[in-house]
Image (cartoon, rainbow over all chains, first blue to last red; front, top):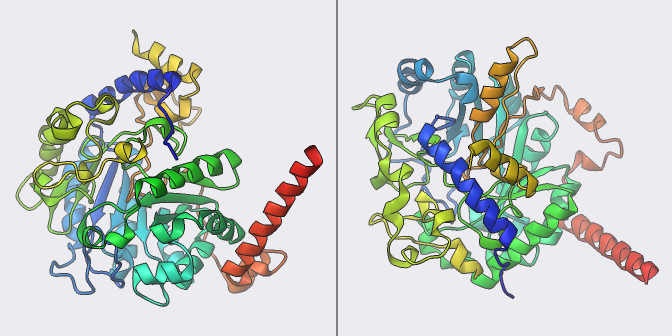
Length: 357
Length: 106
């Protein structure tokens, strides 16, 4: 099975899109701010990119520290209504003050959302979070019960996550189910889609494992090229079918599948219009980017000063034009892939485009 | 080439959603020219891997009671999650329907 070729129309489209990208980089308006509010987690997933534990070595960031950054650095320099704040972890629901955090963020004019494994999302908790201004939520659901529970290493994780999604789907929240597709799921995606649709789930996102955290050591979770192409074909045909809103995540340039498996052309927005404040105060792009790309720390630096004057590696990706990327014909569209796919030395760990050749 | 022309060309090529640029919802009372500038300045909405969908402005409502929840699903089947077996049956029914349609179209 060969991947889809990058045709002329799409090539022209991508060349034109380069200009859009350049303008976004030039503006670098902060549009999404992740707050890694905890590294504690009530699960111990095999594919966890954060390597979370039940009792994280790092303490949760106090809410006041995050609010101080908002009040002193972000709010004076942005229109809060245009910045989406995402609470991430770890598992955010382990924080008992999550509702208070949401209320405070909402009071300042920001919209906020969260990513959860759904384990602790009861009806009461969901209602409380909605009252606190929750606007959007993503729940991880990695496949059928045996597969999901095996990855999540907890026998209740599947039923809790599915129940959480069923509850959420009735509230009017923006939401999606996120499936990390592993080899065991590739040939069962059609069946899995039917299960999601039957349970009233309308929005779905797929991604695949990338070599970071615990996932790096667990090769049984990685897709081979053939499986990856199958996943792309599945997403493409499902989108054409139009029964469920399905997207592949942002993580890599997909050649001929660009604009067919997700709503947008590929672009790594980390550090461009996306920033994160990690649990120890580190300032970076997305939370999945490795720690040696940290640009500052809220306890030592002014967040806004860091946002405006650093992030050079994120905004000018010329440095990625080395090794296999140096001679790649699509580098101009891909700019060396997602920042989270670069290791500590800047080497590309995984190339989606190569997988689809 | 002017940036606006490029955006127009992207739309002509069928990439308006893929390439651009969400527009900011603004109230009617705001200045029309200002709205135009705001719309142009909006970044493409990239669905981040560990992110959440962009809120579409719809107001979320809490679920008040289990009874209310059940009422929203007239056939009652949603009261418990659909199982793998159910999904398999649905899938088989869909496949059978497709095959029947294909046969009829021959």
